[in-house]
Amino acid sequence: MVVLSSYRAYRSLVVTCCMVQCDPSGLCTASSYQVNPTAMELNDISRWKSKINVLDETYRCWMQGDVLIFMDVDTCALAFQVLRSNVYEVSSDPLAKLIKEGNHMNSPEKPFKDVYTALEVYKASQITYQDELAFEEQNLSSYLPLSKEVDNDLKFPVNGSLERMSTRRNIEHYNINPTRILKTTYSSSNIRNRDYLNLAVQDYNTCQSIYREELKDLERWVVENRLDRLKFARQKTAYCYFSAASFFSAPELSDARLSWAKSSILTTVIDDFFDVGGSMDELVNFVHILEKWNVDVESNCCSEEVGIIFLALKNAICWIGDNGFKWQERDITSHVIEIWLDLVKSMLQEAIWAKDGSVPTINEYMENGYVSFALGPIVLPTLYFLGVKLSKEIVQSSEYHKLYELMSTRGRLMNDIHSFKRETKDGKLNAVALYMSDEKSGIVEEEEIVNEMKKLIENQKKEMMK
Image 1 (cartoon, one colour):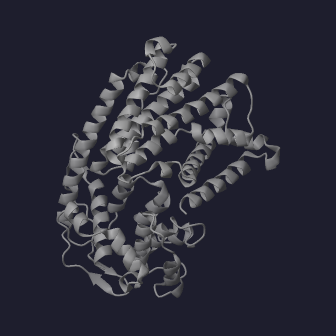
Image 2 (spheres, rainbow, N blue to C red):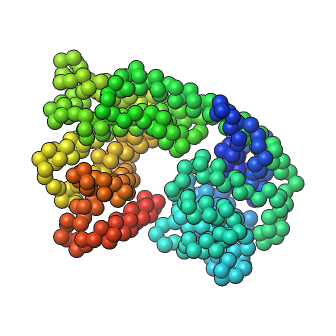
């Protein structure tokens, strides 16, 4: 199928961009790595994008029952991943039927003809709703003696990997043999892996140059806003930018990367301020001036630290508002301010609990804790820079808030599981400890509580994918 083969090619190019040998400058040269042998010849990514709408065309073929999608499990599983990952409403039933029919079966221990098919089905099973598609880790692990790629997919699942890093791993283990055995033997005579690699290296170097300039701009922004003078604050500029570039690697998403990175830096600084850097008077003062917004810093800020943080935050919010207007064609500044106010108020509540020595119920803690986890100011403003118009009705909808709550609650629970022992030692509130002290839970053992929380985290992930 031309469209899906083209998608494979595009995915291969993305993969190849990460598999290059870098010199000390960070630029790259072509190496001996090879790309996906099922990819069609492409001369230019942008030309390919302009000619083929892969998602819509694949969806059309899926809905029409195109034989070239449903002729084998490998192609069907890949098409399902592409569509479901991009929020197309498709059922896993056709894929499950193909698997059940058994035309691809080899043996109960290794049920698929080759490792490629097993990998695609395993990846598809990770983006299903609840128990739509039963394909467990043990099914894939039977290929471990044969493939390092399988081992990597077990260690780094689809929903827990950064795209650039996972594709870098994958390409190391690509089979360079241009012949694949599906239901019929397939071989392409148009594959020139060196061409793919050279194009990918060029793309990689272009992106690296963009990333380096953005990081320099970000470092200048930190200094210009005097955030480096705050001795209590962790300096995480490179880390924050890395997380942004990992999620939004496309060159055209510069605004998204900078919004994410600036907000990440500020949430780190403000978290440290509320945790160790500020007195209760300073915390209350900071919340008040953020609520007022248009204030004279000299007369309204009770300390230099409060003034530095407020001005840096205002600078970032105004930058997001100005640039967001270009993308959304409407003012988004008030919404961004509201998101930050929710965060600092939740942090103030935790500071009050700590100061008073009071212990909230688990429900009170989680209702406040999913906000104080601080994903709101990082993720939500960034959504404005991804090319989709978000109306006021959308950002005020119950579905929008529910997705944010699920995302943040999962983050809070995972964080509290990993930080339980340290936070207990420091006398800080933690979901694990609160669940253990909650008589209604009926569970007092740490291991049992953690297992229950992990089940909840997994269920929330499935709910987010509906």
